[in-house]
Amino acid sequence: MTTLDFYYDVGSPNVYLAWKALSQVDGLALDLKPVLIGGLFKSANNLPPWTAFSGVPAKMRYMMVEIDRFAELYGLSGFRMNPHFPVNTLLAMRTAMIAHEEGVADAFVPAVQAAMWETGRDIADPGILADVLDEAGLPGPEMVARTSEPAVKQSLADATQAAVDRGLFGLPSWFVQGGTDLYFGKENCWMFGAAPTGSLPHAPAS
Image 1 (cartoon, rainbow, N blue to C red):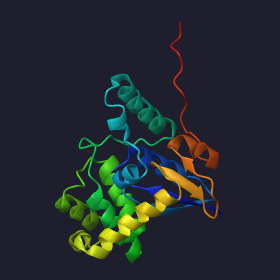
Image 2: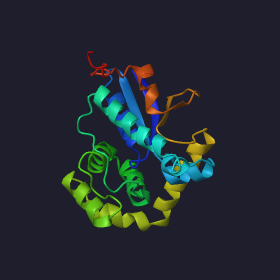
Image 3: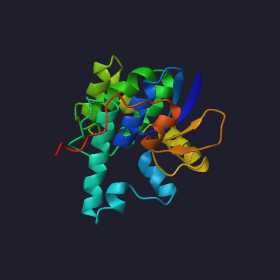
């Protein structure tokens, strides 16, 4: 069994796609590590793509083509671009810290990822996030209320800084557990056995 230290923020479509693709690989386990993508960008002196390429409309259009292509190739038919994107995930990722601390990340992560990237809910809204967690069998209002605790805030800040110190500058990113080589981007999923279930489009017959 190979285990990956897989860093995530639920606000990234590429994180969702890589997480889904890698989760389907037999003999591969993901040790999920929550971080705040906005803090990661800031600390690493990086910019999110929708800011960095806001003046290049052709690049922005292509990024969406590439996201949809990946979803099709890997059979991720449930994926939908969230209509509220980009979503402020500070609340959700503080809640993620609580979920990991309480040992309920296995319920939290699929529920919030699905809400964000399959059913298009606005998880920046505390009431909606609490509902999503309730539906997953978690104490949603209580978990959301705890995000105002100083210790929870600090734990997310510390986790994000630890990721920067390890060399992260964006997401999705992962390491083979115990290793030092960084892998960035869903395009590297194939290196860990994630195989497309679809096929590339063919040119139309002449």
